[in-house]
Length: 532
Image (tube, rainbow, N blue to C red; front, side, top):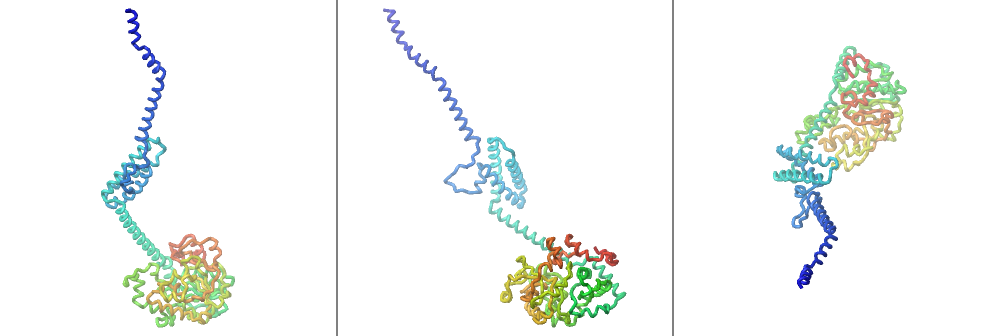
């Protein structure tokens, strides 16, 4: 009985359940280990994704409207935000410096350099890049916030920068005007060597003056010869024009030069041309101050030059009238009758039928004889047009807001150039060109049609009376622009129009050898006066 009771008690110990748990755990332990590893891995991914990774997109708040300035200042901005911050910081650094806040300007500049170094650094691990970007954005954001608290915000920065830009533009305009004035002074002043040459020639003339050779006198009125005229007060420049013309002429003995100068340079001009033969060409020198018909009762320009308003316009720059005159219009040549004498050719040469007018800043490279047989088709003048660009049309030189000009002229009409012009004096007298010139000069007493100069009234006077010549006859621009090499070789007449005359130090060195070719540097007076 007792044994059976013990066996029953043992049976009630449920050994079968313990055996089942042992078997279950022993068979599934690897599954638990796998789940635990996966959990740890997911936790690491979660921490890395939310802790150290860069947030390229800021959290949106539907309650708050978007604001660019606030977005730039926010510390959560990253790579693109940093670039925008740097741009704004550069502007604010300038504003801070202008406001004498040197400390803030230094801080902004330092942070900009640091940010630039970060953005240009070699490739780094993503985690390090994200961390450094966040730090840079936060530092820059704090500085921008500081600047904002000092009222260095966008609107204030724009206003201050506009004022700065305006000041810089005013300074640039003042410097440009100063440069133009200095250039004008350099162009107007006679070099010391040329001044010395004039003095020495004047002394030479009064020591041994004499009349023009008798053989040359009949040539002066012979219409079958080639007559050229130059109006100038520059002895050496005029000599280059004459010398280059006769050197390149096939028949220099048929060339006649009519030179007109003023009283100051008359003796020097006579002396120089009496010393040289110029290959048999005839040379006449006249004094403009001896033309009795050239007086204020006949010439409108002389009447205007006696007017106090005109003199104030030139000498004071229009200060009396409260107007500011450009420096380029205040040139003595505009007041010289030598500049306006080109409108009185029939009076200067009453017995001639055709002349070629040359400025004193040209060099002749070809025989000009064909110009005297050129058919002008009934026109008064032959000239090279200069309307290849829009700034050489009539509206550039004339004030077309004036109703008188609008009623009679086309603002887009093609301009042309003085400096080398064929003049038919018979047609001139027929069309009364001098009378037309007087008409427009009298309408411009108040200078509302044009400013000073001879080209604007020339465009009006010869309107519809100009025959176009081939451009190779007259190449312009050597005194202010670059000229193509091919044009330099093709050109019959090269013109140094502009301030950079070849006898000045400011002349273009590239073209000076062309002009120097016709200067006799071996002449004793040239060497004595150190002309170079």
